[in-house]
Amino acid sequence: MPYQLTEEQRQVYRETSIRSQLRKIELLQRHAETTVRRRLPTARLDPNTLMPGILPHGLTALSLFSGGGGLDLGFDRSGFEHVASYEVLDICAQTLKANRPHWAVNGGAAGDVINAGWRRYRGVDIVHGGPPCQPFSIAGRQEGANDPRNMWPQFVRCVLEVRPRAFVAENVPGLLDDKFAEFVTENILVPLSGRYTIKRFVLSADEFGVPQARKRVFFVGFRNRREANRFTVPERTHGEGHGLMPQNTARHSIGLAPIGFDSVVPTLRSGFTGPRKTTSVVNSKASMIAWNRLEIWPHGVQTTREQAAIYPPENGHHRLSAADCGIFQGFPEQWKFEGAAYQVLGQIGNSVCPPVAYAVAKHVAVALGAIE
Image (cartoon, rainbow, N blue to C red; front, side):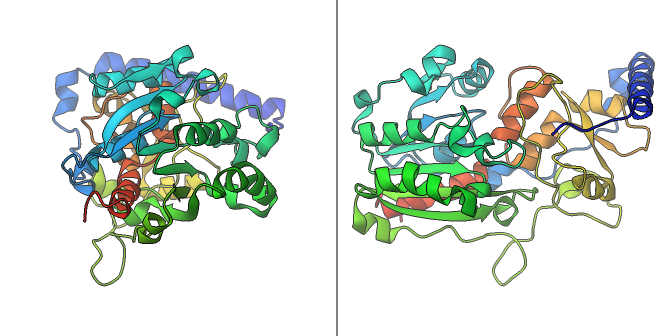
């Protein structure tokens, strides 16, 4: 339901927006880029270190709903050979092509899985993808099978036609709510269980070195029962406990000075489209408490660090850049996103965190006997 605002509240928002725009124009005119560069923070976290490159081991992967490339990058870093990506949003396909020019990327109408024929990919070892999560997320109103964005039947159709040795599907934890139990049974388990042994589990991104509180559910299926039995759910690598690396926190990760408090950031907003084309990564009013405590401003995210530094918010907090948000999601800075600021943020927020994808992909490769 939309917020019910009084005319007085609307006027406050109008005045704030106008004041912000005028202030931005003034600051952009006042500051030269050379002045800003001297005080730009330098990121301390390189997400590549969370995904040590594994040499190619011969397993191949087909990607559906590829988005900004979170799953694709995780599988790539874990030694899988990329066969093809399918992504209906052109801007996401452009990102994939820009970062991996040698990949076969099907974008736009060519990337629409509804019209795709999959039998030509028989022999591919892995099919992976994250069917749109809006039908099962709170932000997406949780309409499940009644939501036209529900693409689980298309993912299942691909798996049944390709017959890979294994598949990996990712979604929001809301899919495991009791209200969707019938959906999961009828649309995922029943069509696939006769051919695949399926395991489902939830992983937290911060437990794999990503400086963000973000949980996602994974469905991993194996055609061979013995390979399924060899599969183990990835264990956390970061946090408190013996043998674990310290949690990567937000301010430290993007190179901000200590303020006596640091933690992971709240889950980044994962909306992509909409009339406002928002450049905010706030996913709820409650999450602003955490952002404020971190002294990080999550609204009006700028394309570059230079632009963000030129245009600080009125409260003096650190204004985010797209590069900062990429690190919060676990993307290396070398992975560049195409498009306007709102499109970049949409690609980041909709992606699987690459280090989490990497952990799952590596465990699948172990189960299939490709690596030890």
